[in-house]
Length: 454
Ligand SMILES: Cc1cc2nc3c(=O)[nH]c(=O)nc-3n(C[C@H](O)[C@H](O)[C@H](O)COP(=O)(O)OP(=O)(O)OC[C@H]3O[C@@H](n4cnc5c(N)ncnc54)[C@H](O)[C@@H]3O)c2cc1C
Image (cartoon, rainbow, N blue to C red; front, side):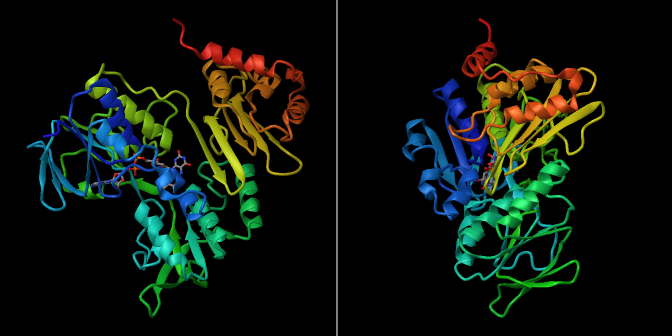
């Protein structure tokens, strides 16, 4: 019997298992997954397809790590949970007892009931199986249609284009990733996507997917009535918590995800949930109820372990941040930047005359305190922005010390002078001089000030 069973070997489940083991060297732990024998980095799926990495290289731990750390692994699908008898039931009928159960079952691609959505050739990009299916379809595909303009859609477009498969990209919204990006950034990304010879269609929607004589996808029709011949249809209109298989468990409180408190506890005794599938009943200020990114999954897992076998502690994720890549443009965000400034906020936006480099900083219109930043085409240090956001730094301080945030590789063109000149033009009453001399000193000072005082 395993007192702790974790369903899911993604980043959330794996971090929970590792951190539990660090805190308790004895307690037997079982981690179950239907997807793969071992944990791998989902974020690297695209690099396997593009030949930059092999699947083996995406496993952060050697296969012997698990037995060495006495974390037992079971490959298989869990069919249901029976919380009254503290048991889970596997698809093969086997029953396993638990004392504490962790649901770390991740997400699944959205499907909105499109006719033909389950035909071979139509697929999301989430699992290792999805990658294998795409690999198979790509062997003979002459064109692909991708629907849904977000981060996974753009990854899939890049993947297929590297194999010489032309891509038509249908995005229902008027602006690319418009629920997250402000207009200027969205328009810049659209331009960049088109430059990569991707047939991007904004404001166009998939209507239905049609079968060919071989029983596979042959063409799609759009809502405007156009027919597009294709052998692959990428269904990348977002993901949702992978909870359908739990629908028989009526007593488990669920909304879009599995409802949890700030200790990752569900409404059922001894049942916990972390990662993409977990939804906070009472989200922290400025945070969303669902946090479906890698680093939050890791944080969830670590906090849960603490609550299960250590001192009980409420979740405190610190500032929100995220990073991604749109073909060649790197993107980072720290703090909160909504597509439109929130009430009482102002936005400072700078864009390079050439190339794809932008920065947007939102700040309080009265106090000038920074609220969040979007950076495209430049690399900004997490610790520096975390410091500015945590210490409620004001815009003149940030502008004057902007050099400290940048960690672009050597010989990359620096834009801070131009950014500050633009700030000085727009806000002459808050003019600053760019501090170019104490880059390293300032950075280490900032870092030192982030150390917890002892
Ligand atoms: C292509 C792609 C690119 C991404 N890129 C980024 C990125 O750049 N940055 C970022 O922050 N995030 C990125 N993400 C999101 C990030 O990968 C997820 O937020 C994270 O992997 C979720 O981790 P998790 O542990 O919650 O769940 P998952 O990684 O989904 O793990 C859950 C596991 O549980 C298994 N499982 C589910 N149900 C059962 C069951 N009933 N029985 C047995 N096993 C079950 C699943 O098969 C899966 O293996 C990306 C996601 C994708 C798909």
